[in-house]
Image (cartoon, rainbow, N blue to C red; front, side, top):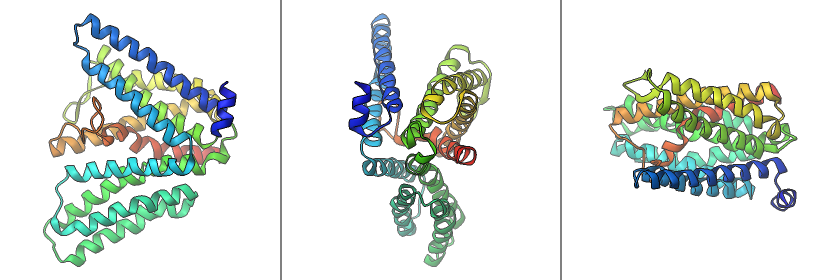
Length: 317
């Protein structure tokens, strides 16, 4: 049945099997969450809300990314756009920079078009070179120098964090497929997203159970060395087990990739935490019940996506 569905959806069988595995985990998580809620007299309502949100996020992501490729590009660009929008809603911006913000938003579809087409040269330089040169020039031409450096820095970093980094997910899906005869670009993207999100949950679980030594008390007080190391080690093992079924990497290479994703994801998480601490906000948005905004869910991917993409491209293409 899995093979027939894979043929109908135009997906590799390992990808379909992996997605079904995620749904099996969601069923188990839902049952456990409801049992815990009953035993605690409703005290686990937040956990139940988080699990429900995972059902929605997994379903939307699966349908949008793995069913129809042009829709996949639009969906990933939409995630990037929403993340950028949340970022701009948090940071202080000057009224005179409205045109500059418009340029930043217009850069999203262009960047994802280059990713969709697999144009590696343009994909790599469009934002970090051309847009980063254009934005400060446009600001300077306005003639307002008060707050100029701060405005250039915040807008440029927002584009880097929410557009350039996340567009690597699209590049991995569309351009790296030929390098993965086992499951194509979908297999690589699934591996990246699953390990990054699994690592978030694993670090939270290990930290909740054994965490005592804080890593960055002023930036992210709940992050502990026990949680970080426990999550990273668990991610390495899980990546080593599933990697050979979804990618051309063997157990060792898959485990190494899992460790890289775990470390990069952690760095992305605390970087966004530093931004929110500086701005005095708890969550970037309220779009996803129990999870905050889009930026809160993709924070680990802002680092993990480009790091894994270039790791894979360097060693396997």
